[in-house]
Image (cartoon, rainbow, N blue to C red; front, side):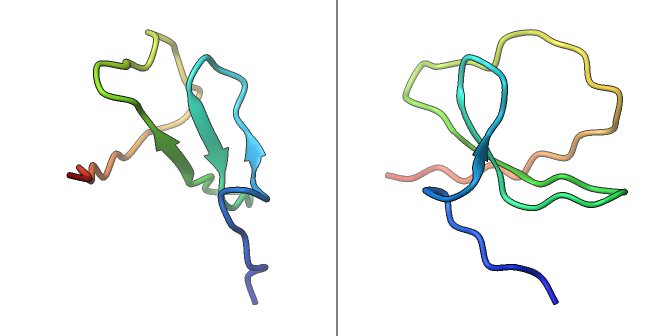
Length: 58
Protein backbone atom coordinates (compact mmCIF):
# COMPACT_ATOMS: atom_id res chain seq x y z
CA UNK A 1 0.00 0.00 0.00
CA UNK A 2 1.24 3.50 -0.83
CA UNK A 3 1.63 6.08 1.89
CA UNK A 4 -0.53 9.16 1.37
CA UNK A 5 1.46 12.25 0.46
CA UNK A 6 0.48 15.86 -0.17
CA UNK A 7 2.38 18.76 -1.69
CA UNK A 8 2.84 20.37 1.72
CA UNK A 9 4.31 17.15 3.20
CA UNK A 10 6.41 16.03 0.20
CA UNK A 11 10.18 16.44 0.18
CA UNK A 12 11.46 19.26 -2.06
CA UNK A 13 13.74 18.57 -5.00
CA UNK A 14 17.17 20.16 -5.07
CA UNK A 15 16.62 22.77 -7.78
CA UNK A 16 15.55 26.35 -8.33
CA UNK A 17 11.88 25.48 -8.94
CA UNK A 18 9.06 24.31 -6.69
CA UNK A 19 9.35 20.54 -7.14
CA UNK A 20 8.05 17.97 -4.63
CA UNK A 21 8.83 14.25 -4.60
CA UNK A 22 5.41 12.65 -4.28
CA UNK A 23 6.63 9.03 -4.13
CA UNK A 24 9.89 7.12 -4.49
CA UNK A 25 10.85 3.50 -5.07
CA UNK A 26 13.52 1.56 -6.99
CA UNK A 27 12.02 2.31 -10.40
CA UNK A 28 10.21 5.65 -10.23
CA UNK A 29 10.08 9.04 -8.58
CA UNK A 30 7.05 11.15 -9.55
CA UNK A 31 7.75 14.85 -8.93
CA UNK A 32 5.06 17.53 -8.81
CA UNK A 33 6.45 20.71 -10.40
CA UNK A 34 4.59 23.97 -9.91
CA UNK A 35 5.81 26.69 -12.23
CA UNK A 36 4.83 30.34 -12.16
CA UNK A 37 3.96 32.05 -15.46
CA UNK A 38 7.20 32.54 -17.42
CA UNK A 39 9.23 30.34 -15.05
CA UNK A 40 11.43 27.67 -16.64
CA UNK A 41 13.20 24.54 -15.44
CA UNK A 42 16.96 25.17 -15.67
CA UNK A 43 18.86 22.96 -18.10
CA UNK A 44 20.16 19.86 -16.32
CA UNK A 45 20.95 16.15 -16.77
CA UNK A 46 19.12 13.25 -15.16
CA UNK A 47 20.46 9.71 -14.73
CA UNK A 48 16.95 8.43 -15.64
CA UNK A 49 14.17 8.88 -18.19
CA UNK A 50 11.63 11.64 -17.60
CA UNK A 51 7.93 11.78 -18.41
CA UNK A 52 6.05 15.07 -18.32
CA UNK A 53 2.31 15.53 -17.96
CA UNK A 54 1.42 19.20 -18.30
CA UNK A 55 -1.69 20.73 -16.77
CA UNK A 56 -2.41 24.40 -17.28
CA UNK A 57 -4.49 26.03 -14.58
CA UNK A 58 -6.49 29.03 -15.76
